[in-house]
Each structure stands twice: as structure tokens, then as C-alpha cells.
Length: 146
Image (cartoon, rainbow, N blue to C red; front, top):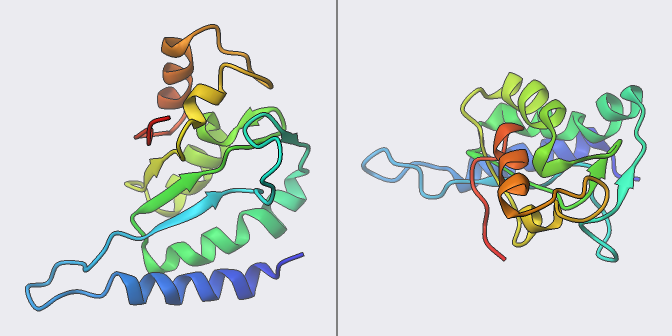
């Protein structure tokens, strides 16, 4: 397992370096952290869900991101998976209640196809409109496309 303190410290330093300002005071790039959160698989991605205790959320999965947000990245790319039956890209708990408590204007983007994945397990949205509404109403700002 990864050390959240090490990962978060590394991420904060990486974000600070990436978002250095140019001679006119503009950030050189907009840094996004991915894949937020509890993501570490490439098989069956998009339709898997993990049962995560509140303790593990705060001790392991969210701690590194909270530390990384001390460097004020632009936002995150939500992960394909679901936590406790709630897909990351339509998860009010991780996107609004947690992420936006660290940075209220954090921007959330999906990876390609993540909104379309909401039409399958574990939530089975009936169509594209419901899938998009589910993502937008729970904290996602932009879908990358399919």
C-alpha cells in the first residue's frame, strides 16, 4: 500500500513545480490530480465498487489528496470506480463534501467514458441524460468525452 504522507507530499511538490508562474504572473499549467480516489486497477474499470470504511477513507484514500491540495492544484480527474456503490464521478461525498472543503472552486473532470459508464453497474442510469445529470448534480464539472 502507498504511504499517504509520502504520496501527498510528493504530489504537493509536483503541483507547485507545475503551476509556477510565468513572467506575467500566469500559471504555466493547470495541474489536476488523478485518479480521485481509491483507484488502482485497469481491469473491469468503470463498473467496480469498493467497500471502504470511513476510517480507511480518511486515513488512506483521502489523506494524500488533502495534503496535495495544500499546493492548490486546479482540480482532479475522478476515477472510474465506485466507492461504497457511488461512482467517483457522481459521488457527492468525495467531490463536494471532501474535495470542495479543501478548495471550494476545485474543478472536477472525468476520464474518457466515465459518464457513459454510469449507465452500467453499480448505478445503471437509464440513459445518457440521467447519467450526465447524475454526474453534474454530484460534483463533476466536465466530461472528457468517450
